[in-house]
Image (cartoon, rainbow, N blue to C red; front, side, top):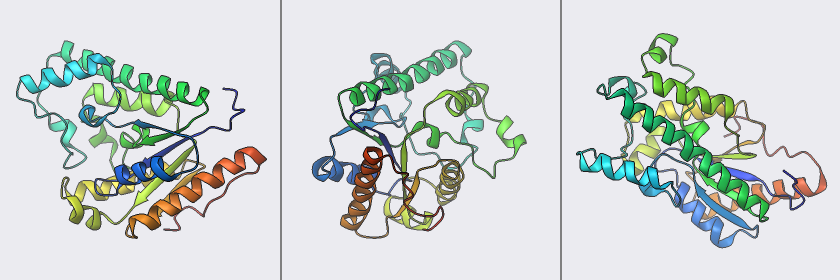
Length: 242
């Protein structure tokens, strides 16, 4: 893509309770850069964009008594789900992949319009493999889940910048209590391991006030944008500083 406008993509990631939505709203309101927002998580009800088929599948699931998205309780939850019709599983997988690439299409459309694209969550981090998950345990995951993760890891574009809104799992659990402490601990480990492979992975401690967190995130975005204009490399902090 011709980047004469010096646009880029930035993902805010973190566990439930980290303040992704709050910081996103503050950035959209106060950041001087021309931002466009995209939800990049799996909860269709929380998404600002979605394919019609995704909305239909969500309604169909609810009509059958499925409560829809619920935070997982541990890394093995996918291996414990009930066996489902193979055709239904395949259709859902195809739609999920189409949904993810639809959002990439929108992201590129925003960038062509001169926008910096702000991602709330990001698929490649949400579906990254936990470094402590054994091969044997990973193979217990359903085939469609493993295929989906492989496709994301090997074909899906990464954001230019990833900002990890970090806090100890105990703090996040105390704030919301929507997922187990074990799951949140493993999620923090997964994000750290995945982030170690990314050149612009920035950790911001969200135990600070939301105003301080916003100021740090906003400063990183502005300085990264300046580095694109000057051609200088941007090294915000040594990895693992937080």
